[in-house]
Image (cartoon, rainbow, N blue to C red; front, side):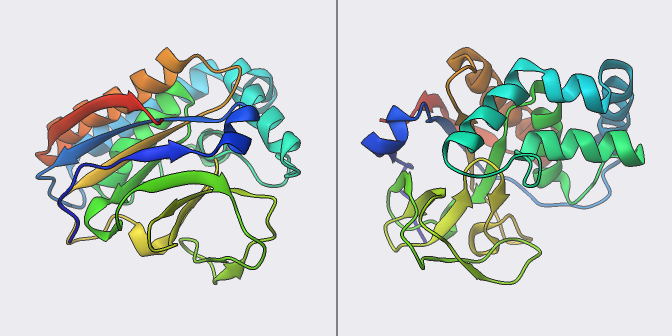
Length: 229
């Protein structure tokens, strides 16, 4: 178990591409399913999305555009692999429902839909040491949630801990190795920033997620949002 505060650094090559990270930590969460208040918030989010966006206007939103531009820069086609926030909103537009998982994951997804910022929530006790946002190494293993394990090509940007576990492929997919589960009590919130998205917007998304974890998951924000070094 890792009880030390998280530290994240951004490799110089990735920083030159415009990537940055804002993160915070929440302790004492309890993972639950089927909370009525979370489901009600999810219904409000669905209504907001349907009143605010269409598939065409979403594509043209400056935040979504910034993520897409970043993905093009690193050689990933965002019309085939969507930034995570865009994928959530598109799913709501297509199906008209919020994709509930559990109260902890839902809070991050709600904040992501509301702000359009791509967010990752991780079980901090499964993170070893400090983290780095860097380019993947060719052949590096990644075990995405809901998919078979894969080998990365080396063009991806990844968030990796001191043991070499890949937590996240930036800014669209998380690992099952550090995902939120029934035993999770400490959560690391990571906001994915890229050039074209104000740092204040990413910080607000991270802060909002922390507030929701206090409301919906009994958590206590133990560290305020801060930018990775």
